[in-house]
Amino acid sequence: MSLLKLVNVTKSFGGVKAVNNVSLEVQPNVILGLIGPNGSGKTTLVNLISGFYKPDAGDIFFRDERITGLKPYHIANRGIVRTFQLTRVFKQLTVMQNMMAALNSHSDFDSRKFSEILAMMGLEGKEHVVAGNLSYGEQKLLEIGRALMKDPDLLILDEPASGISPTIIERLNKLIRDLKGLGKTILIIEHNLNVISTICDRVVVLNYGEKIAEGTFEEVSMDRKVIAAYIGE
Image 1 (cartoon, rainbow, N blue to C red):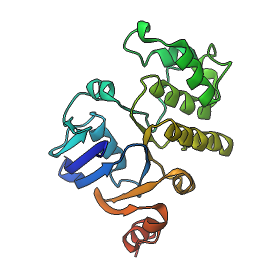
Image 2 (cartoon, helix red, strand yellow):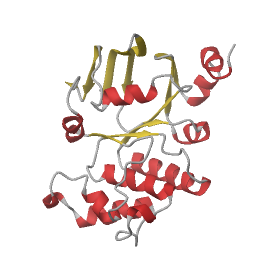
Image 3 (cartoon, one colour):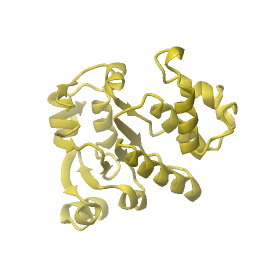
């Protein structure tokens, strides 16, 4: 049984189909990469899955439950949590306060889980540091840590490697592999194809809002449609 299933999902803006009749399935405990040129519809698709947009047509299912058109917080409470292309940490708050902000109430706070997530992020000892004083890469890790406080079944990462140092990228790659080892399912949008080739089990390629290829990174990188989308015919 697939964890997430999209069936013929379409979304238009001003007559332009940002996502056009896309169907895909995400199996449990895999790392799925979502790639494609700029403007191919990747972030729009994630916004549809996470409830920030409502599809014009098609359906989205999570654990066989139809979640099409639900509000973002309802979808998050069902187990789908996402990060954003541009970090959305609360820069005036501490690391701990940022991570607690993910919880529905302070009574949900689990100090052991908090410490474990902090260690996974490589941010141990920085729980009382104001987030604005962290490096940009550490802020990106913090945003992932905040998402993990909700203990999601599906974690969606929107360009987590963008604008960060090679050292932080190595930490990011290890973190994502460790999360898979803990039974998590990860959907990652990323322009850094080294990251995609290193960590992803499968890859879906979008172009002009349509799915043009799916398979292992090796398979899609040799697909003529994919080559044409990236370098032109």
